[in-house]
Image (cartoon, rainbow, N blue to C red; front, top):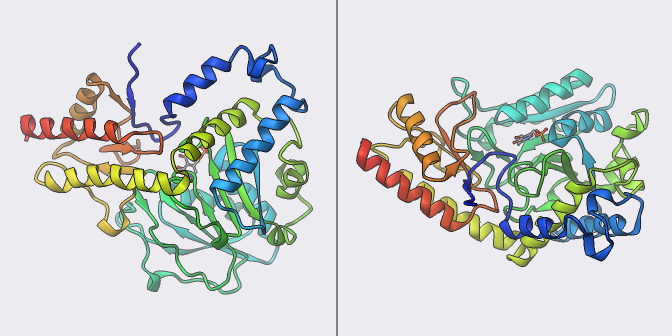
Length: 362
Ligand SMILES: Cc1ncc(COP(=O)(O)O)c(C=O)c1O
């Protein structure tokens, strides 16, 4: 079997040692005689996996004592709704920094439930190729919270420094860059992320919440959608996606063994440096539309001189063993997602392919 190099935007590459270990233990988890898939979520084996995974997530995120971690099903999209259901009370208003497709969806969901404002929207002709400048934020000092998306998966922008929101609780969707760098968790009242990019399989969301802020949450929400309930029940309010939690645990161990968030940041900076370096060097052929200061280290977006060449690039890269390079269906072009599990070597292979392609077709 030859494994491909996976540049998928999500679900995306998983570390090979993680997949190998999961394969090894699939039939018999730690000598228990059954698969982790077959263990009861209330049994000793899974309870330990769940507790260890929550603890490791908290450790790697460097959560302050004020914050707790929890797992929720439903991916990041459910979080768009759950956040507003819990924290957008009648009569209150929330601010959203609209920096891309997912940020816009988060705002739309909040608007179904209450008042939510776009405190910034940096779209230019429908594209989000930069981030708002400090002077462009029209923040409401009385907002229930400010929501931002740390990394724009589709257009390829990423906040390098978070904006000063003057004491209003800050909430982040970190789905596409969680644990790719230190999280600065103490800046946030709540962080959520779908697991399927940097942390494991789809369907699971990881949440970190400030417990004091949580005390202000609404209680007239169905239990399944209340953060407090999930916290009180240690993320075992109902049957969790046990295999996803187990696999996220293996990914977190791999992150720890490879230097934690700081180690990931170094690795990701180098990888992104290689790819953007190539794009800048070959700028007569490839075009990287994102403003330099807003470039994402996770999702590198670029175009070739024509749509035909974009397609040919993706097809030929596929033949050379690289998959997942097609841009999002809404933007076209090419996108290489360089999540934690993508190695420097994988990026070197891509860069050398880009050199060859530009030479042949440029
Ligand atoms: C930044 C961001 N937020 C939210 C989502 C939606 O995640 P999910 O599909 O888990 O609901 C995505 C998916 O790619 C994303 O990139």
